[in-house]
Image 1 (cartoon, rainbow, N blue to C red):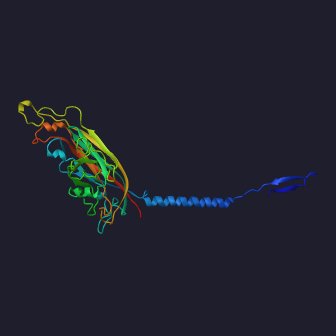
Image 2 (image 1 turned 135 degrees about the horizontal axis):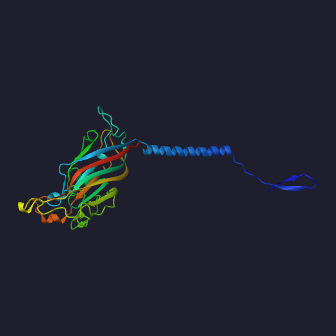
Length: 321
């Protein structure tokens, strides 16, 4: 019920309605708001610290060491077109007893790989196709990879910080890529399976959509096609009267960054192999699909491109427990 107050000013009597007002203590309200804000800030700070975003950024730079650097158009060597590039196996473990400290070493068993940068240079005399992507090989694929060497120099397995990686070019079948669990799509071919590709190559294959698919983007590029690259008697096989042959070579470079942002856990401080999770690595595929190879005898090996150099940078940082 509303309360009324009587006014005695003057001769006339008047009644004024008295309204209720709610008062909030500014002091207590401000204190509560400040406490909530502080708690929110603390929560954000703790989350940022746990994510390791403020940890020291680290990088390992490796150069490719490969005995055979030619990419061939014809013959059996033309099927060798895949190169393994290590990622998690290249991250140096923590220093063991008697080893020198190095800021490139990881300081935690939990590491976040933010990205991989690939810088490559090729000398090209015919159309060349290049494909690069990162993926985590399934165990059915990994057993094939184990048979193809990919060593870090100095050895990261031995606790050293690698500066090179040594491997060789092999067929995509040797890497186990023709698999239902592989990074590339496959299709039925009678009782077997083959890559779901227009021309049967990995370059033209569809990318898988299941858990074994590539991590992030798939890089594809073609270069070296166009005008005539070779003249008559390029291989000096004809009579001297024909004249000296000529092959035109051009240089092409690639500088591509692959964003991963994936966290990996290592079981032991001085061991760099994954125990309960899949390793991560990259596939570098390069071939020269020219039909010119069909008209040349296999005894005359025709190179369509050559590796000049490949340098890989692996970026990562520690994630606190």
